[in-house]
Length: 440
Ligand code: FHN
Image 1 (cartoon, helix red, strand yellow):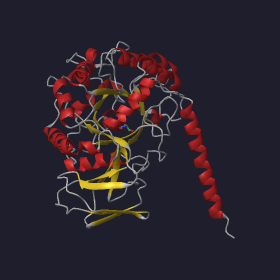
Image 2 (cartoon, rainbow, N blue to C red):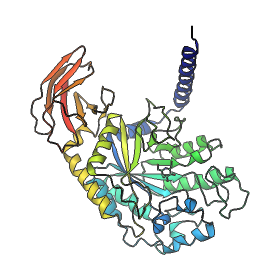
Image 3 (cartoon, rainbow, N blue to C red):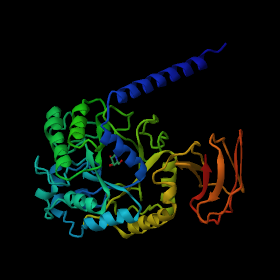
Image 4 (cartoon, rainbow, N blue to C red):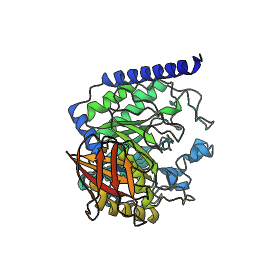
């Protein structure tokens, strides 16, 4: 008898079960406040957010990693803020654009891996107010405007820092950029980073939360997460902690996020395949191919592609956080605006099947996904041209089925072995044919 396969399978299953148990007990040790739990639900209802990568790197039009990718010395990079003068920045227009796109929250880089603060920090002078001719705090303007227009604002915060001397020992992305070969990592976190976070959680009104990134640079370091997370939850109990560390969720975290992937897929190669069944989920992606402004990137996704991403995210019980990189002068380029508005127009018709829903009863598949809300199941047919669609069994009894658009009745047969829908003819240009099932 060949014992090898069953044994290795057994080992894998046991290891997986152990990891899952450790994760869920770690999460269980953290008791979110009632405000936090409410904010999580609201976050899940919101479904669609605007991600913004904007910093002094935008001046070079070569993405937010330009400092690292060109292996620049810090004293050269430090010239950049002198050219950053976003005189066209209009917080009102940015927030209005997000709203026109049907987005319910904005997540903006308060600082990226270059460590440059896009806000008025008093902790050091490597920031927009002290170093640029602009001299103002765009995050404050944005926070006030977001508050006014009723949309939530989250701050992306890079834990990785290519500029601060105390980010030492350096991590996987280190290169010789002119920093001293010494530094105090504990002080970097406790004195510097936590003080900046305190500013972000104190000076900008109620914020949606903090979106962390960069821990993957030093995965084995002690990041004092407990202390940082407690600080955030103490200052604003409803603020959500969303860590992009690509690992299984840790105590104190409120949302599990996936970069350029639907939950559990890991086509990107750096995401975990573990998917929390307790936390809200989010998947982020770019509207072209870049996060920060890249002058040569014209790989814009069409509105239909974005709509499909959003629908597939919702069917996977996740939000979509869609990124744009504004220009250094503060404008959002026309190509982004046109696409975002088109998605918003589509959402004005299809939004009911997305906002406020949770992943539906059927596993997402190539043909499409399901979402659900109250006594409705929304069958989102994304890729299926045959007249009949056979689905796995649905436990609830279906009392009626109709097309979302037009309301035409749809023939449905339900049995213990599954559900068959007689689909309306595709017109050829619909992103998503939605069949609404009424269930008891
Ligand atoms: O290195 C960053 C990258 O620049 C960008 O901010 C993305 C957004 O999810 N996250 C990092 C890589 O994981």
